[in-house]
Image 1 (tube, helix red, strand yellow):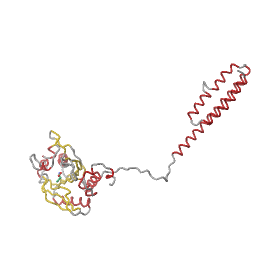
Image 2 (spheres, helix red, strand yellow):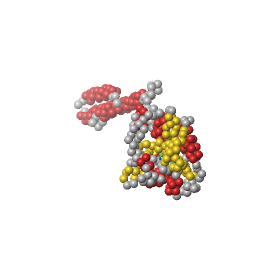
Image 3 (cartoon, helix red, strand yellow):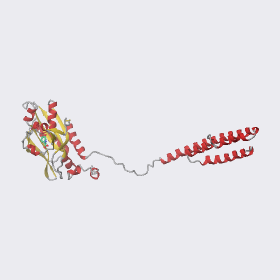
Image 4 (cartoon, protein in one colour):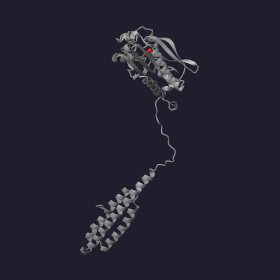
Length: 331
Ligand code: DAH
């Protein structure tokens, strides 16, 4: 090994290294180059360690040269790293440019199911009349669903509503009327409540029936309430909901009201039954320890599906349960 050979080697190293650094295309390959040049086992170290093989007086020449080269390469590496970083940032910025003129890709926005929005509309109208929203359990027992509502065992009214029995005396509530009893057990009149919820009957599903459907129960108890108050309330509600469709009250029968009525609205040339109602039967009040001479009240129950179908002109109740977006997106 001679001074000349080492000098040549350093010249070659310088030329190759500058080329390699300039052509590195990303940070990790640049790092590999740095290690191969300046690392412990890199090419500059190799030159320095073979310095021992040349005469002592020549060594400082090579040492100086090697150290200069080291500093020069360090500078080149840093410069290249800066360039690569700013190029990467520029790429990122260009890639993220938002073209505000391109057409929207379309975002699917969810919205309330028509049954929910119909329930909300019904409940809102009663809230506007000063009613409070309450809810009751879907799993009921015989007492709340029937007996306390003046529907004793063997009463034919139990056949009006085919019941899902759960064993023991538990059942799925067949109507929202049990909420009346639960509320009056806990709160003294005067009361005004509206109670939306799911109810269950053993009906085969067809265009107008479903084993699960929704009702809203209405109850007002106070001193001196009479049928005019019931009628006025129902009319105010129906006029707000349907606009000015003709309304008629028809005498009917429910075990928990006396007198009782069914209410029809005229829709597309025919009378359509939309709710049941009546003055709370004195037997129901007495069962709750309320004196019927002192307190009176009215109640009503309505089917949300029926209101929803009329409101949106829906022909088949099953459409409300199928979760078909092509249908639901229309509302
Ligand atoms: N619970 C009755 C049903 O499901 C509806 C009903 C009628 C509720 C008259 C009432 C009422 O509160 O007064 O068929």
